[in-house]
Image (cartoon, rainbow, N blue to C red):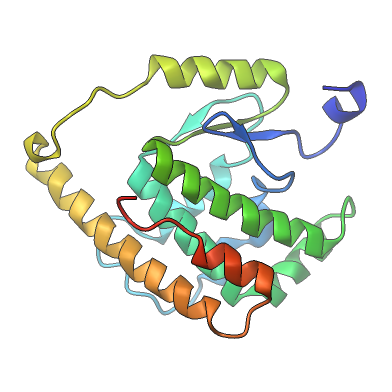
Length: 204
């Protein structure tokens, strides 16, 4: 990585060891807490919008490896994607007020594509680890992922509360995916429509 890149903001962002679009980790620019005030959505499981806010706060930590339960992350990331699409103009306005480093539309597109890519990697890998920084941060992330590789476990032998939560989270993901695919058919730009329709199904 060049010295110019090392000084750039935001620093490179890696999710499950894969480098994401430049602005992917900048969820704080979206102000999800403000977007969800009065947001009519029934979160009737143990997971709630507070989990999304916690992830927003942790997403951009530099030189720190963060992790999360894969199903919890996917539910939150799909909710973030739905908020980005539903409140596009407000998010772009927030970005325009917050930064001068790039055109707001560029930042917004990175947020969309980065969030969708994280959902895909989460679904593919069944784990969620991320960090921001230079080569040393990436090396630490890869070491942590190896050290924390989960053992293979029969889902049917999990404790009852784990089985219940997996079931609840699975239902939430399915509802979100259905909503996102409806949004894809609502006259969105072709690039965004394709992004939403290519999200992986639950359990894929």
